Length: 458
Image 1: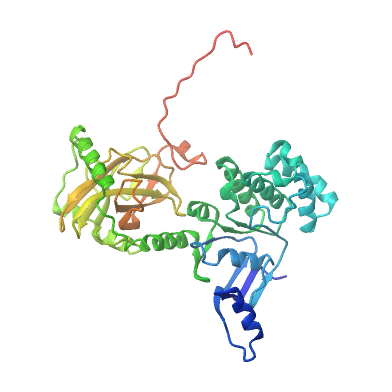
Image 2: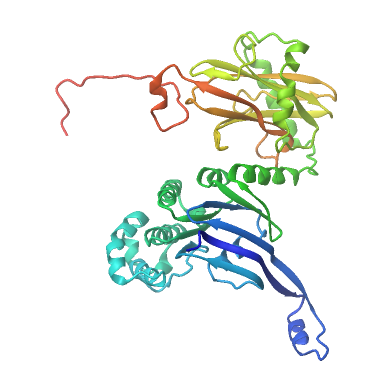
């Protein structure tokens, strides 16, 4: 038995593009075979192997070739050249309503899809109640599916595909139309299937979901797989490509930005003074810079109008730390240098676990609208964030970003510097109970217990 679920070698899919309809006829009957078309490669020289039980994400911008690849894997399309081998029964959600007869009811479509996937009616009889319960679309399950909303389609389609016990599950953005509760339920079901040995190929623009669900990922660009690596590495590269695509964006100082800057200045002039800041000296600001420079070399991006020259994690006395006791306060210090005059600069950070999942995120919009305004070239600022570390015992990364503008309604932010791994730290806990739960983040609670005398009349 082969140990792979899907194997592709030199796949290509070519479409002929005609400028006018008549050109198709002229090309067909031209006596000398003159071409009136141009070739468009939806896929070009795609090769990969996915092992049994692997969970693989597929990311890339629209038009990169993701859907075409999935349709070839599932047999909806045939490749122009190359080979594709699939071992096992495939269940796929490629397009809403695909494989459903709009005139049949939901229940009738459940049986029909089961038969199409090789399940007998007797087997489907044992599964239909679970499928209906998971889809949770009420009495609509007995109505023709042509009356369904897109969310109902997604619910029923996922439920059918999840309960027919496939060897390979392929999902292409179909869950994006569902509500948040249903998406969460689907992710949990997919995890259960992965634990049971099902191979999952997951396509989504939700990079958080890709990192959360998948260990491995492909990045597609212009019909090719340009990167095959861990989900974290691939997602970071994809994000950075999106940031780099905006480098040429030059925001103008619009009336909206002027109003925004005025709001910030009024807020900052009225806010109370900060708590006593940590002492700062030139030596303090450059301490640990070599370690930061080494970390920052990983997938750093931005236009460079402003940049981090150092990022430090300090205790409340100003000493650098790499290990933090659960419940203690720390200071994240960003040392920022301006390489250009900048009207307004905002900052933020993400705290990530070892697999790259963002557990904590904040930026200057959330914390008092504190930004740097009217900065001049060659100026240097130190930005200190003080927060309490209430994370479970584990290793964490802190990603840091500075951007212009920070006002949400103004197009895309202009990212000046993004460092995915600025500093790392370990959390240790003196309390053994802190690591018994399933979560990563603990927050403070005011706990009240009240005995109700006399009971309650139901």
